[in-house]
Image 1 (tube, helix red, strand yellow):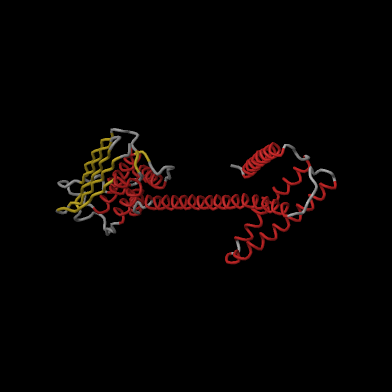
Image 2 (tube, helix red, strand yellow):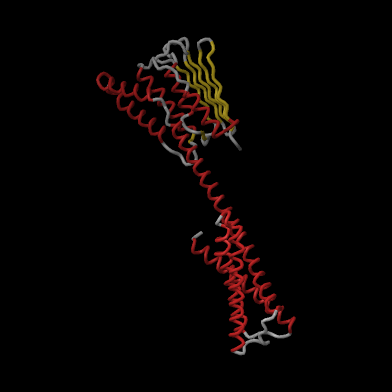
Length: 349
């Protein structure tokens, strides 16, 4: 809401409250006493009381309570000054109204006059103090809420930044190997250069693309998995042994990006796909309720000489836990020279 609109709204509320209060007091007092004062009399004294109300709330109370330990003596001192000024102005107004013949009764500076004036001022001071404490509480609550919202936004930005960082960690070895292949193919297999560059650019664009809600269609990631497979097949003259089975029942299925891509990349980075008797396997099945993704490859005699840092699996687990919690489980192991992974994701209804 525009600050100007808020100010206008607050002013209207105050005007309405004062109008109701003043009308009620005048009517009740008039019915009890059987007579009403001159309008100027009401204007003068209600103006004085309204000024007292806002001076007390906006100046005296903050001046007293913003001084820490000094509040103990500042508050009673300021109250005494305020009361003295109120009494002096009330007496001056009463004399002025009497001189103008605007009072129903003659002015008498007796104990009743002073007690009535002190009680009247104390009444408005109490109302004003309540208004001050309510206003202070609401302001602090608003500040706390603003800080909480700011912290939530900051945490959200940090989480998004972390996710983007983890998402971007497709290992650079794929890029380096592909570029080396492009340099090699440009001299010996120029017909494959264009295809390799197109597939690599699609893969890199996909890896760096940002999404509003952190999700992408699984179908897009499966297409990039095919790009990885074909790029590596080109590098090894089509000699890689790999079985890939994909069953996607729900074309609208979505997942946080590069999870499947990283698992597939690890096959080519750390696996042995050159033995026809031991092909690597990639299996995917997904529907609207659940997704299952499995990989299996020989872990001995890796085709590439890249030591495993195990960061890829750790990053995937972190991202899955952040987004899906217990609805996503990534298992992996190494049995008899075969490395395997099994990812199960149950989608929220």
